[in-house]
Image (cartoon, rainbow, N blue to C red; front, side):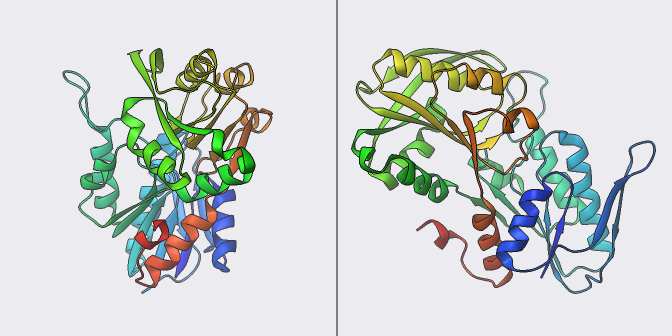
Length: 312
């Protein structure tokens, strides 16, 4: 087995390599003067089971091209099986036509990865589960619920009886219900209306949150507008405190500023996306590592073992 890392999240790639007790494959992923991507694999990978670790986060197009060119280089170097490991799958929010003459970009990206030569895909908490069907190759979608559940238990301890898991919208109910079931907690739902991209308005809270410690659960936080509005609505309805757990911290500007000025106690994200300096400096934002989860999934895939048993 070989692990190859792109430049999108070297910290996470190193942590995964450390979990698996093996070094990252020596390679050069660099740019020409005109910003073209150039990749050189400096080790023999012929006949190897190779995992390319690369989130397609900001800058999404550059990181996507790095991934595609790494896959092509490995294919031409006679790698036996190439698995694209995308802790964060960019373009996942474009999973359907939202109006006339609009693309389904998630399907386009799936086609690009497949045609580049990937034999399988490993990702985490896809925005929409049906994106797995966009690929014509085996695709594993890891669930972060074990990581989140463990962290919540550590943080809340004795106060777990007051805990209430909250979905920030109707579309995330399945994710929130699964976590609530794992923790033995109650469930509430925020009914919101989206007036435009990145803009939302809270309409109603479904469930009695008065006197409860509410935990909002979502897959992606971008501008943080939805989370901040939902947290305020929960607080107005009598919640003792509000925290949020989100898998992918996109956190584009001015997300960190919004979180700092909000009623949120804290926002916890995984390290599927490398945090910029503004996020690291935010006292209310904390990261938990997903390296052990992804590393164990890689080990199981390489050994032809079950990945789904990770979530039993």
